[in-house]
Image (cartoon, rainbow, N blue to C red; front, side, top):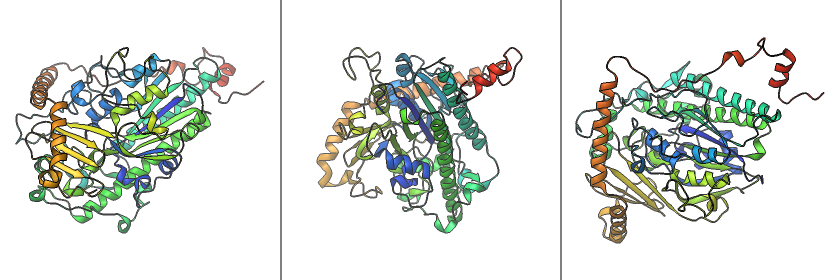
Amino acid sequence: MTNPTPNILILMADQLTPFALPAYGNRVARTPTLDRLAAEGVVFDAAYCASPLCAPSRFSLLTGKLPSGIGAYDNAAELPAQTLTFAHYLRAGGYRTMLSGKMHFCGPDQLHGFEERLTTDIYPADFGWVPDWDQPTERPSWYHNMSSVLDAGPCVRTNQLDFDDEVTFAAKQKLYDVARERAAGHDTRPFCMVVSLTHPHDPYAITREYWDLYRDEDIDMPAVRLDAAESDPHSQRLRFVCENDRTPPTDAQIRAARRAYYGATSYVDTQFGSVLAALEQCGFADDTIVIVTSDHGDMLGERGLWYKMTFFEGGCRVPLIVHAPGRFGAARVRGPVSHVDLLPTLVELAGTAPAGGWPDAGWPDPVDGTSLVPHLHGTPAHDVALGEYLAEGALAPVVMIRRGDWKYVHCPADPDQLYHLSDDPRELTNLAGQPEAADVLAAFRAEAAQRWNLPELDRQVRASQRRRRFHYAATTQGRIHAWDWQPFTDASQRYMRNHIELDTLEAMARFPRVGR
């Protein structure tokens, strides 16, 4: 692969923790597609989301900015239309940009640089899910509880299966369309396609086909069991928000939830494999960089926690695999990196960066990330990941710094947390109060104070919450104008129509074309 403008295919899952993947050491899951991509690609062992929650994580991935830099605090946050995404940069550089699936855009801009959006989103585009830090003892009524765990098991159909089947079908059809258009000489631009599934996000339910890939006796159980009294203050608040302790799951329910999660992970693997098969059939595989990631992880019962919203490793670590065997040799990158690094990486891979390197004064918008291209070539350039959590279950901003083997978590409302992950991968020993780590803690505290103005950020978050809650209350009175993306299909141009000669139509639709 030597094309200076390769195609880019980003395969994204939702709530997929790397700890559930064989590529990262898991011995239960069955994911042959991801196993192959990892064996042939560059695997980042310590990749982090910028925020362990769907919307702010995705917005940071798209923009290269931390949530505080774009005002994207929670799952009802608007990504401002003027904030540039990698889709804007690639499109400006001559790429065809396409999105199939979930991206959790809130607000009237439902494209954010993507030229084509193939499906609607599974989540609403309004401001209905705004947290309220001014009412910390009130549980958000709209937030999911433990029913996802308590009701886990096999199913015939779910809302999420309907969505992801559509996402995969639409993505494959678009790849076929692109191939046909290129063959006809109509649109020869390189493409960047994002295929974003909602699995294995809870509810933990999956079809028998995938449920039966696993047996109860094969399912690993949480390695760390903690009750509320043993948990840190933020975890205690999360347990309240999700009602972990009001309706505690039994061991059988925990096992069923994890089994369904593994089944959903295998379903994701199959969907990704189907898209990659279409990529191969279209002749694009050798000239396409494939990137696999997720928006955040899932605690899956570890420490008594479920879902995300935490900077413990299960919640904030993400898989990150870059597959381009003709361009990069198979390798593993040990040091920490972040989703905010993807935008400068993609721009560099696409050869669309302005002269002067990244970043420079010629760039229209600064970013918080750094290109991962040196890592892909075996010369790591940085080893830091930053995170922010500014949503439900918090009382004040929670920030994280991962550098080398150390992880520091700070919230003005809570005691500091400091872990040495190579010695303590399960984060059982908080070193923040230990004399031997005093210098490390002091350095992290100074860095956090220099990097974040937390009192001002707290003020901005609360003001945004109040503004958006009022906005939602006002705009749901009377006639409602929805922002949800409406995919348009012109049926007059599909299949057989009398304004197109039959032979012409069949020739246009057939790929590869038949030579005459």
